[in-house]
Length: 304
Image 1 (cartoon, rainbow, N blue to C red):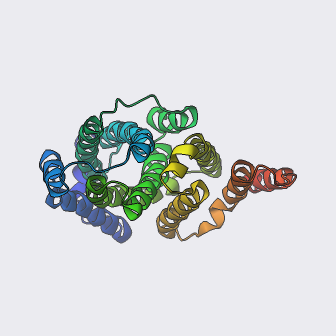
Image 2: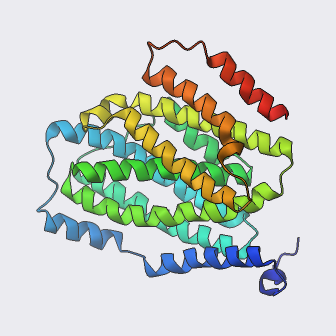
Image 3: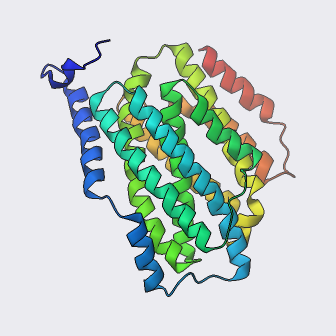
């Protein structure tokens, strides 16, 4: 591969790739116009609401959940730097570079907010740590892009949405609106660029990607169970949080797969595994003898 990508100005690029490139460049340029000053915004919100307003009971749960968000932002920062360095496509590299700036801002602003709550972030729970480390450490670009942009980001957006709806703490409610606008662009990077990587895969590589995704989803569900008490303390229902996040994940995947001319059927085996694990975690008293049927169906689809 040439060190200087001379083909970025090649007008003979396929129309679909050229369109994708323009959309990816648009993510970068939109990110530049939407940059916000974290320190300034936080100061303005503190003045607007006369400081942080939250009960002691809610504060503990909020601190625990957004401590996880803090570490997630740090990993997202590192992953976006990796994507910016490893992606060859010029337009996608621009979008990933823009994301790195966003994630850096998200990290330091959330740290400042937690400092105001008088909270020192604690280590991650085992399952959540496993999810973040899997995405951070994988050398596979498609897995890294799928894991961060289309699996973790929708979870974060879901937590932001539910937290804002409940208006648990007014400063955070307004602050998360800025985060959501940024995260939506980050998801768009995965939707636009992942299809290019999948298009180059053989069926064994695709099967590996699907199985890896199933592992990530399982760990995400276990992670929600690990922080169940804090989620309930804030007035949320863990199962509703997961199902909304799962819905957003599938919407993102379908948008990405539409570029390949395929639908959700390619992920159908995963849905069966997820259904079993969801029942196992959230309905522990239910009969789970259907597990073997789900596994056999999943493995059969991989072989075919």
